[in-house]
Image 1 (cartoon, rainbow, N blue to C red):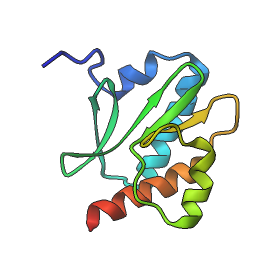
Image 2: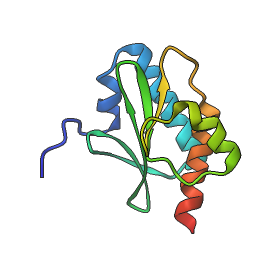
Image 3: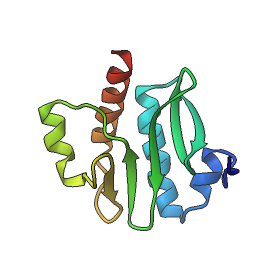
Length: 118
């Protein structure tokens, strides 16, 4: 197994320019507002939110966007809200040049938690 480039989520976030760091920190806070006792680790070279030691969701920073992976089962209303951000089957890309819809990220986190509870 290859070694992780980043030891933890703080190192990962610190590797980005300051403006992207602020967005990634807010994504992190948004997720933790829904799942305050979630764990964190680096998996697949990106921040991984865990519940009971198992991956719940991933987020990552890129040059022009931040992403959330995978896409959980969602209702029709949330599906419509995330449609402009879909990139491929399981990725959502939120462009950094536009306001990040943190409310959508919170709702996605709730959907991840609900899917895990089933």
